[in-house]
Amino acid sequence: MRKTVLFVFLLIPFISFSQSLGIKGGLNHSWVKSSGKNDNPMPLNGPTVGLVFYPGISKVFDIGIEPSYSIYGMKVHGLLVDNNGTVIKSVTESVKYKYLEFPITFNIFPVNKKVVLNLHAGVSPMIFLAGTDRSNSVRVKNKLQISPLFGVTAGYYLSKHTFVQLTGRYMFTTRAVYENSLFDDTVYAINVFAVLGYKF
Image (cartoon, rainbow, N blue to C red; front, top):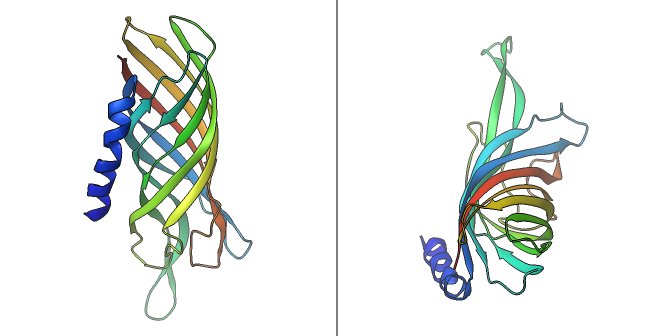
């Protein structure tokens, strides 16, 4: 609860000074590489929703601030056995972790009144909120991550003030994520999301 309240207060200055405001929603395609002691985990698809702020520094350069709620994780294989150790069947379990993230991007925009195109790079502070793992075998080690990212955005102005954008982005964590030694320290993700925004 305290994290949420602090998060809301942090938004106030961004809302006050932003020239553009948008709502975003999309998908995270995330995966974790195996260290060789286990079969490679499979990618997991999870939602991402949030807000997008642009302060309007100039027509060709701007900073994007994107407070978001996102889910990352993986799918892992396992064996279901009985009391005698006999394998009953193979199962796949989703390991999901919920984050409050705060991507900050540096954007380069070609000047165009109708079409929105940009290349961007930045970092995303990520605060761990909760996780789901039925076997409780994969636990989070560091609850704060600073994840580099880069991507591209294409969009269009529907009117003088209203715009839509589609963003593709690649990001990865830089600190150890899981306590379980079967997996590498890094979570990789491809983010794809749409933004419906308004320019004041």
